[in-house]
Length: 449
Image (cartoon, rainbow, N blue to C red; front, top):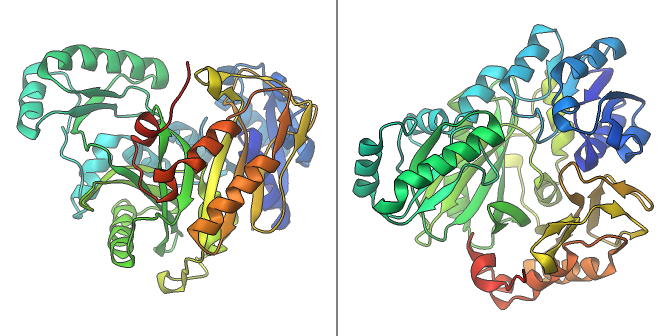
């Protein structure tokens, strides 16, 4: 096992990793920007080093600075968390070349699965169903228009290197296609430094279902069931639950088997998430694989009692998975609400500032993952997440009641948060019945500008 690990991230995920390291008796090294000098992850780590000014480009994305800290502090491994450098193949390669273990898959796997076109091609070769789409960058307008006509409108343009809705455009008519491609390319280039895009048949009002994968370095791969991540606003997840309220045991096994097959197609190791779209007729299609820990991993931990972050670290240290697929038991229902520093009453504008009051909920089956504390000043430079509120109960109805109670118990003053918006979702009769898809917020929830 490692003796010292650097955490190349900030906020709640850095705190989450440091806690896992401590329970494994591993020393932790934090890195931080000047804006995060007073952050909780800095206070909790055994060692902490400033790596640059507030700009993430000059700090959390600054590979030379991070590697310098790794060398100075004598770490054996680096955990990238999610976001920033977590899916950066070059960073993983630098770690590998420096003799430092990257806690994640190999740089080659990140490169293959990080390119959505190559990922689709790779998993399709082993029989995993994919959404009909182009297999190359959209440089030939005539060919692209012919493909769109063949699969039928609407279609969707996506960035090959992207995520989070960046470089993504839905096109309903042939007249709009050329402009949408150029807009998507421009946005993708600005967001990811890569302007390549591809086109898929747009699956209307699907559910977004993802399967959690664990794979060791000895060829053992299992899935830990699914998460339903369909509650989204502008392609950004807001609320997740596990298991999905619509999957039968038979469909879960079928999708899970394909998720494992997708991981094995690239000799995957460490944790990953295989993402599918599920249409109203229960047809499902692979859309991408995230080669990192997910923001919403706690709901899977709650229903399986498996510490996914610890398993990441142990896998990276060369240990075998301590369980097989038949040992994975799904127990109960878990939901997660992402509490962001945003004013949902004013079109979700950011609301940075001082947390004058911060009282978290508690009680049985309630978990709060956070990187803040009372009097902490939330900076305006990074993701607006304040905390993740996670609950567990034996069935969905009880879990909904517990989440409602916990949200009302959560007291945050000094900034605006998305707590009122989450309560609005929970009160919606369609959500309570489990009748929702990725278009739910647009169709069912009123948002004031």
